[in-house]
Structure formats: C-alpha cells, structure tokens
Length: 353
Image (cartoon, rainbow, N blue to C red; front, side):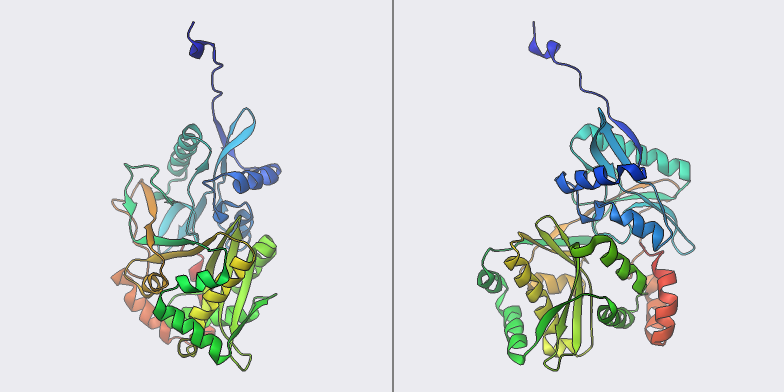
C-alpha cells in the first residue's frame, strides 16, 4: 500500500482574533518565526490602541492549538485619507508572518473578509516579498539592509570613500555619541527636523511609549558636538540579531559637522561590538534625499511589496509627501510657528499611517 495513504491527514488551520491571554504565545512565535519582524511584536498592539486610539484587529492562525501564523491589523479612520485596514501603519514591514502556505492563505482570507465586514476602502499589506501576486501594489518604497562585518574596522572600510571621509572628519572634530535614557533631547531634534521637512510630528508620548513597551530593544543614540550639545539623534529598534535605526532628527548645524553620518556609524560600530549581524537602514522613497544618502553608504535598495485589496477604491492610495497635491500643505506647514506645529502635528500624524 502506498505510504502516503497511511500518513495522518494534516490538521486544518483555524483563524481567530487575538486575546490578552495569547500575549506570551504571540510574542514567542514572533521571536521564532523567520518571516516575522520587529513590527509583528505584540507590544505594538498596546501602542496603536493606547497612544493613537486606533482599533486593532490582530489575528492568529492555529493548528492543533499551536500558533502557525499571525497577522497584526489596524483600522484607521481619517477625514483626510478615509477608512482603511493596514498591516501596519507607521511600520516599514507588516503583513502575514506564517510557518506555511496554509496558515498564510487562511490569514489573508480572514483579513479580506474582515475588511469587507468593516466597510473599509482598502486593505494594505506591507510585505517584504510578494504574497498576493494578483493584488495591486505600490513600488514607491524600498528598504536597505546589509550584513554587519564581525570587525569594527571592516565595517568602516566598507563605507564608500566619500562618506567614510565624512565620518573620519566628524571623529577628528571631536564629535562623540552617547546612549540617552530618556527621549526629551531626541524629541527636540526629531521635531525640529520634521518641521523643516513640512511633516507633522508624532507626539512625544509616542516615543515615551516605545521606550516603555520595548525596553532595551528601543534605544536612543545622540551625536554630541565638541561642546557637548546634541546635534543629531536616532531612535533604533533591536530584533534578534538586527538593528533598525527608525526615527531620526538633527539641527541644521549637523550637516556641516558630519553629525548624521557620524551617528549612523556610531550605531553600526556599537552594533558590531554587540555581535549583531544585520544593519537595516529602513525604508525610503525612490528618488529622495534619504534614498541617495543610504545608497552613498554602499547599501543596495531592495523593493518592498506593499499589496492592496481594493474594495471601494479604483487605485492604490497615494498618501505620501511625494504626491503633488500635498505640496501646498507642506509649504504652509513649514512656515507655521514651532509651538503650533508641535501642538497640532500629533493630531494629524496619527492619521498618516
């Protein structure tokens, strides 16, 4: 008799909503699943609902009572951008993290049905690789990831000559870095940077929540001038053997000091000394200054596969500063007083996703 006829049938996958009692199991699965990212961690559920007051619809797939896949989803309602379901807003990566195709398909189908029941205009999945080849997608964003060499000097020499010279000059000028236990100094740099770029800032309580929820896996590094003044800073996330610099800020004087190159070098140096393996430079839009900066560091862009299930929309949303229709608003925002920006900005930023 064929051995396949004697094999026990594979148990079906069951999808259900996340419950508080699942917290530890969800987190353990994310730490172990190769497809999972820092943004799949369960702590984001607390931040989305507690800081931004967005409704979460976190789904998990089980087989014989064992988690085999997760899908974090957040429902956004915005007067500017409409009603959507996203995995995940404010995140570089999202979508399904699963151990097999059966779990992946079950979670995707459950998300599609949920989107229909909620009456959203679209469902957005921020995947690192193609999942639903037939869905409309956006190719606006790329990510930059590179292995960290085990020796500090090898990482410095891997930086292209021009940018490496900027780092060396910054060191010669007497710039130094330090890890900050708080977020106040970083937030001042971040808010100043966002104002100059015409983008509403997130509230300081968001960064405080990130530090509280993720602990040592969320870190602030400051670049200090020779006089000890913070001139640039970066908030980074740590996940398994990777470091992801995610939020950054600086003063206008940072460019002349080479402080931005210096802060990223210091982050890479420290990550190397900790034994980490991957430096994830994060997401950038094509043909932007951020894109060029990371290319100049010797990182190659990898396309991101943001896929959409459209319900009432005819096309993929273009809710980003590159959209020409937002340029007038960006120009006005840059001219507003800093106090007004810091007060009104968080109320707008929570809807940007």
